[in-house]
Every structure is written in structure tokens, then in C-alpha cells.
Image 1 (cartoon, rainbow, N blue to C red):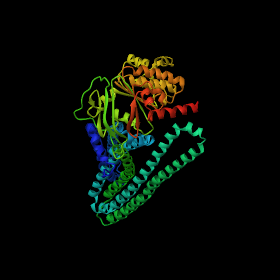
Image 2: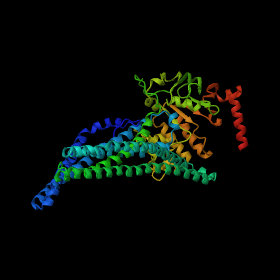
Image 3: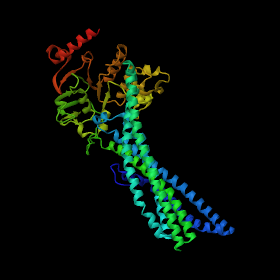
Image 4: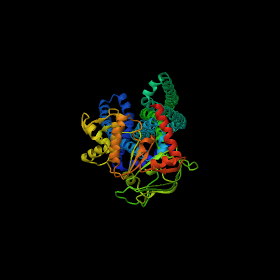
Length: 581
């Protein structure tokens, strides 16, 4: 079963080590279960002649003994199945947990390229299939293989010549099972890929239904969806067809072998090399062989499908990870917020830098606005400050500490982000503000007051205990943004990053959010990505980025008087605003 493969099922075996005690008891029950088969076969060989002789006492004695052995066997089977189920499920849980932990450290650039629907399918359906295969391997396939060996041993002892003739069929059956299994694995990989694509399309469709309706594109989406499910059907049908074809092919060989044994057994009895007792035991053993062979065949197909699932799970491990924390990380406490960038260069593709030799200096408590066209490097600069990416040249200092020398979590406790598009997890409002941090109710309410959110939260049906629905759909955009501000300031960060947090709001909501931002910004170093230039006029510094370079800097008034790129951007936006109004 555990053949070398790209999936690497053997790599799961170390995860079973913490459960060796439970596994040992399970294996003991398995050995009792398997060991009962030779005894039952032996009793069957004695029972049939006793029936023919009409010896009632002997028949009843043999039946009673068989019932006792059978009862012990079934108790052992129950112990085997129940004891071995736990470790298999715990390994699956550990695998899923480890992969999700690893997923949280995948580089954001790589993560954005992955389909949410595909990842969801891998960590749910694929992980479940791996669990099922592991469970069946431990509690079903392994006992079936041991049963095969035990029964074949008895049959060799009864008549080694006849058994040797049967074993000549074994390579043919194994070859056919392997041949079908390899094709089943390929077909399963294709099928699972189609399911992942279908899950991705469903995620996009559900989130984008309002847009679909707005463009009257329902027919287009329906056609696309039906095309995806048809491809999925075809892929699944191929898998089912291969499995369905395997059963009659392998079964025909097994039946041919059975008839051959009957013919050879009759010849052996006629020649006097085998008596009726031996033949009865032998045929009983042959019947007992059928069930484990069927189990091994079916489970091998499922194992191949499980390998395809495990291979897809392991692909998550191959995604590039965030840079690790330095070995000798510098400990930091509460910082003031002095920020300095020295000749910082970075590119997602090193041959095409996004930021080029950027120098910036921001004093603690100052507000710096970043302006410039799309692609100028503003968001990339934020990703460097949060250490989602690491500078390739130069360095970034926070209170004199090089960011590359800090633990990522220590840094991110000092740097908070308010994104342009707020994301919240389902749960209470208080939980959305805490966001997994150990904060008291008083701290949560203080953060909400700073964000100008306390009044509207208390007006909700259950106040801070009000449950937010998926994507915060039961509160307004302005309210959601103020919750995001409260979430950002809860940890009292020294550096606050604002990605134009009001650009998608109406005037009334923007005023409420602006008040929350003003209160949240007090006493902190703030960097603002500004798309609407009217929002940055009061910044202490305005830096103009273009093609990854700082092309101008200064206050709003100074930059307007100087002319140049900033004034050009302002005048263009002012003209657009006049035209729109």
C-alpha cells in the first residue's frame, strides 16, 4: 500500500507516533481477529465430515467451539476498528491544522494567486479523503492483508502444490490492480481539479451576483457554470468507469481460479494426495480469501484517490513562505514611532523594481501622505512596513530598529493597518475589534470611542454583543470602517497605516469616519495612502511617488506653490470633481 509517490503517504507515519499506545492495543485486537481465521478454517474441515457421519455430539461440540471463536473474533474486530479510528482521525486533524498554519505564512503575492474556492476544497474535502484512506488503511486494508497471509499459510500447510498453482494467478491480479489504480489516480486528480475550479467559480459567482444582475449577465454566468459542472461530471464519470471496469476484470480471474482449484482438488482427491477433511478446510480457506481480496482491491482504488488528495494538500507546502524571523531577533517594547527609510529598493520580480532608492523620514506623531498614480509603489511600501515583504536594498528603521532584525509579530503589534476595504470575521462586534487579542471589555470600548464607533455600537440590538453577519452585511459601510479603526487602535500601535479609508463612503458616513480617524491618529505616526487629494491637505508631509521614486515632497501649500507633479495631480482631480458635480 505505502508505495513511494509524489503524494508521500509515508510522511504521515511520524504523525502516528504520539498514539503508539492506542495503536498497540488496536494491533493486538487485529492479531486476535486475524488469528481466528485459521482456527475457523480448521474447524470447518472437521465439521463437514462430522455432518456426513451423523455424529450429533461432535457436530454440536464443533459448532459451540466455532461460536466461541467467532464471538471472540467479533469482539476483537470491534476493538480493532474503534481503537484504530482515533489515531487516523487525529492525524487528519493534525495534517489539516499544520497546513492551515502554513497557509497563514504564505507570501501574500503567492496567496493572492491562489483560488479561495480551491484552497477551501483542499482543506475540507481533500483532507477528509486523506483521513478516510488512512483510517481504511489502518483498520481495514492492513487486517485484510494479514488475513490473506494467514489463510494462505494454512492453505500452503494443507496442500502446498495446490496453493502454489493458485499463487501463479497472484501476479496477474496485482498487475491489473496496479494498472487500474494508476489510471484511477490520474482520473481522480483531474476530477479534483475540476471540483476546485467549480468551487472557485461558485465563490466568485456568489460574491458577484449583484454585479451579474446589474449587467444582465445571468445567462452568461449560467452557461459558464453549466460548462464547469459538465466538465466535472465527465471527469468523475471517467473515474467511476475505471473502477467499474476493474471489478469484472479482476472478478473473472478470481472465478476462473476458483473453478481451477475445484478441478485440481478433485484430481488430488482421486489420486489420494488429499482427503475430504483437507479439501473441506481448503475450500473454506478459499472462500475466506475472497473477502480480503475484495477489500484490498477496493481500498487500493481509494488509496490512489487519497494519494491525489494528499498530493494537492502537499502543494500548499511548496508555496513560498514569508521570510523567517531572524535567529537573534531584537526585543522591542513600546515604540515612539520615528520612521526612516534609507535607500529602500524592492521588486516582486527583482529585475523590475517597484520601489527605487526611496528615502523618507517621519518624526514620531507626524502624518505623512503618499500620493501618486496607480503602480507608483504606495501599497508596496505599506507591505514592507508590515514586513509582508523584505527590502532587497537599503533598510527601514522604526525607532532606530532595523525591521529585518525584529520578529514579525512584535513589529505588527506596533504597526496597525486600516485598509480601504474592511474585512471582518463573523462573530460579535467586540470580537471583531479584539481580533484574537487579549483585551478587556473596557479596552474594547475605549478603542471604539477613539474610532467614533461607541455610540452606534451601543445603539445596535445587543450592543457590543451584536453578531456581525458574513462580511459585516448587517452594518453600514461607514460603521464597518469605524469598527476597523477601533480594531487598529486597540493595541495602541505607534505607527498607523491608512489606505484611504473613506474613499468608498458617502459624505455623511465619511464625516463620521474622518472624526474617528482624527481621534485615532492623535499622538501616533501616521502614513496615509491618498487617492482623493483633498483628504491630505493637513498632512505634515506629502510625498509624491512616481514609478517607484520620490519625485517631490513637502506640505500641501509648498507643493502647490512650487508647481510640478503634485500640483498637476491636484488640478486634474479638481477639474474631474467639478465635471462630476
